[in-house]
Length: 278
Ligand SMILES: C[S@@+](CC[C@H](N)C(=O)[O-])C[C@H]1O[C@@H](n2cnc3c(N)ncnc32)[C@H](O)[C@@H]1O
Image (cartoon, rainbow, N blue to C red; front, side, top):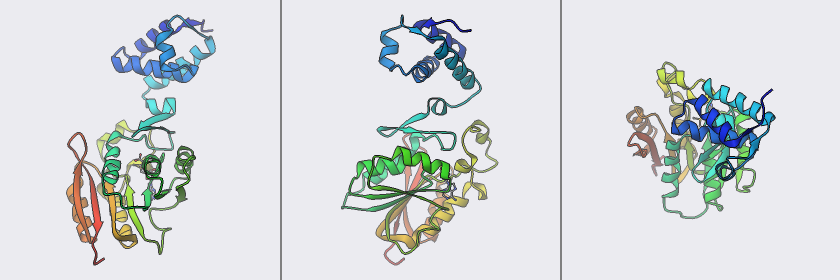
């Protein structure tokens, strides 16, 4: 049986087990906070306080899962995105910082009054929830083919009355509506991409697309065009090598596309305004 230990001892051991780098010390503190319910401030301010054996056993299990490669976000159950904390589970992609570019692009467009927005492949709901919270007069619809992911998105957006949820295959269940903004961070990784080996804990259905990673991007580009209102636009995240093809596909489908890079300088998103003649 594990004996009670002080916070300082528990943190030292956990951090050493993880590798003793600054990141590991932060992870150890986060895991300790998660199992005990203690805030970061209490953990730092009271190193002498005792942790009971049940919490230490729980912490040990978490450390072992972390050593086996489980992402921190799944272990603690949350991930920060924009200015909120989102619940995440192995049913949802872990939101990436580069996806914040989509919010920067949308929120920096002139705000000309109420809009209808569809967030395709919402996952944990980060894009839809952030937009609905930032623009209370907009009506945001979050969709996903994964019912499990949609349930998590619903929990993340539970306090927002301008946000609704629809399960479905991209835009197939939308007909006869005019949408101002369609936004998506779809799966775009080639099934043969070696980077997938490092992403084994996240759902394949959130990451991988056929046709060298382009299948879902192309479906969304073509399904969106007839649904966009005048002056409406489609905004897509894509892989850093995919921008030229996305621009070409958007032009073929009748958009005026503009390319964007993320903060690291990588080509990451394309916004396509609907042409008047569509
Ligand atoms: C890259 S994840 C993006 C999640 C979230 N929007 C984000 O940025 O963190 C792609 C999402 O698309 C969903 N998806 C995959 N195929 C789909 C389809 N055919 N129709 C609707 N959603 C789909 C996945 O379930 C997943 O949640």
